[in-house]
Image (cartoon, rainbow, N blue to C red; front, side, top):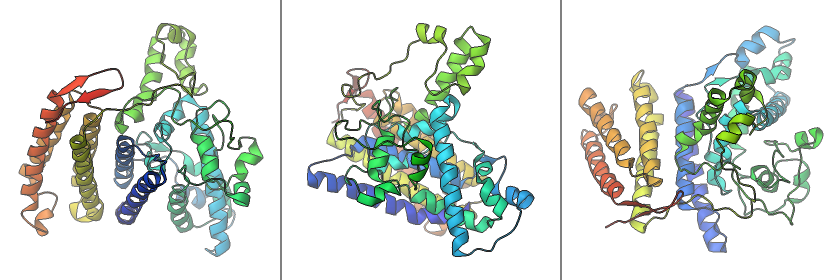
Length: 425
């Protein structure tokens, strides 16, 4: 928990700078692939994911350590070759899990958020799930466990393997020659994120593209078919918490509504997108049929609103950084109280970005929760050690923020299903 938090204190600003650099580079080259609200939504999604992970809100039914302790046929030392074996084992396991996520209705819910952006950029790489609380990943590391690959090797290679999947989420790098035959490149991953019929459910590889070529899931990016990004049932929101549970909500509703007892179970294990016939007829769900002719989700906003949204994002990142840097002194159960505040912050911010007329309710709830923390503890999670003024600054921010968002929410004028106009003074 604490060590991962310290790693993220370095990784988060690095990722943010790269995301902002891509925005600047695209603007400079006349090919801006980063919309502000989409980027901020992605950053919020990343915040929820790493907060959940740092707080350890995941139940591992079978850990790699348990596996290696019980089935290892031998125990090898941590040499450079061991790290190579671990890397290959992790990459193959990642390929299998990725394919399952795309192929099975139940598992798609945990991966949908990563594909929910209708853009393709570095920011969308940060869209990661908070809806996975049980992980079965370790069983796929069976080959490494049989060889007795040390736990500390997997623990080091794992985060590096994950972070190495960030760079290829971009449209600014073309095909990369002979590397296209070996590793996953931006071209390969653009195919993976596309909803064109030629590209759906292709290129599951995470670092090595050889798995896709071995198992018949590889597809080259075609000049005649420019990739179109997103999911065929668009999420129509900037709120990552809502996105994380949209698909599961639909599955549960379909299971409840269908008259077939067989279909009540089948809806969870059938291929992604499958719905019982009686439910699909009575409760249709919008699906993009022509990928070259649909309106991307967006909200119309003024420059003051954009500036305010970015200010809120900066405050959120500062608060998350404080949490990650002070996990041990904050202690348990206070870190979970802090985590709950972060999630409420994200929900309130993204409801405001969606220009939901009721966004002010969530902002007021955030303010009440935050000031309640200060009154109860008499401090902001030990910030008095830095300066006793901090808790008053936070309380003042919460009050001002709730007042501003309330004023903005009352000024919202709906103009359609996917766009709203907000008048700001």
